[in-house]
Amino acid sequence: MLDDVINNPDLKKYISTYQTGQILFLEGDDAQDLYLLVSGELDIIKGNMKISEITEKGALFGEMSFLLDSRRTATTRARGEVKVICIPKEEITSFLRNFPSVAETITKALAHRLDETSQILFGLKEFCDQLPDAVIMTNRDGKILTWNTAAEKLYGRDWSQMQNKSVEEIYEEPHAYRLFLEEVESRYSVREQILRVKHPEKGIRYVSTSTTLLYDGQHNTQGVLSLGRDVTSVKKLERRYQRARNWLIPSFILLLLFSAGAFFTYPHFLGGRQTVDARKKTLRDQLAKDHLLLKSLLTEPMMADDQGKTQALMKEFFDIQAALPPYTGLILIDDKKRVFDAYATTGHAEGAQMIGNSYGGIDFQGNSKSLHKVLVVYRANKDQPMGDKGLEMAFELKKGNQPLGWLIFQMDVGLLQREYGIDEKDLKNFHFEKS
Image (cartoon, rainbow, N blue to C red; front, side):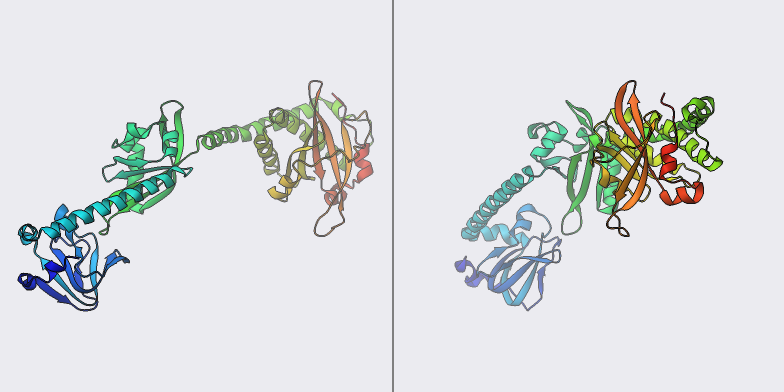
């Protein structure tokens, strides 16, 4: 390429020679000289990475800095002995007049690069449009350069509306976005920051945003790349749970006081027909009180199929116990005797494993006149792979005359024997009056 130029004797005064590893110019240099390769090979380096090489005799390089009057965008380093023609910036115009073939070569090179860049950008746009997350790229001034199809859906605006517009326009609180960018600049990138967005049709949306700054070779900020995902439903759910927790503990305290009063004012609930010793009476009284409390709390969320709330209430029930309770867990089963929800003091996973299981094959034993039933179950564990005997107390749940299911207390068999001297027969002999 350009053999007639590099062999021109009038240009010998511009020839320079470099040895292996020597730098012709550095990325970021404020220089606009034009180069032609006479012999040898060159490596093109951006940052710390080799991105290309120049090996063709007569190849032209360094023209972009001259044409754009900008700093060098990459470093050029000799690989072996290299000879080049270096035309100083102030002589390039006259050089191009004298050698129009060089100008023609520059024009063709620019057209080729433009075509390559267009294809790359088109491919990148196609790729981004397949992503589920909203992709936004802005320049250093915050003007939107591109965004994908997911961004159009998430923010409710098409590309023609937002091209070269400020990205701040999509946020409900532009000041919050600016503070977010300051944090990004101090940390280079920030993940999972939730920002409020103004959707023209859906109203306020919450968007989880991950943002990274884009830099040039001199570490100067060139723009911002952001990925966004709609988390509005999650945010609303978190708010509901937060509100529930704010009233959960006070409600428990009030209901405990209420149930304690109800326990003393409604002795008929406890029957009183059985002659029991003090320890058995203590356990029976606690079962009556805890049943009343949990029934008042769990009935409504169970009817609403709100498993999240029933799980939180059962956990809170165990958390507020002052002493070790005689139960190892709680189970809610529906009117078809399938487990709706379960909580085990030994861990969340154990309780979660029971959800969906059926109690249809388990015998509900007890006096038909009592509110409770006793269940004998065998559950396998690491110590008893064939099944360890367990006892459970089941209380029927109703809303008016409508059966909802059962509230089941998983009894601590060892503690029953040690602390109360109670076995399966004693549990069956307990009596709780039906209301």
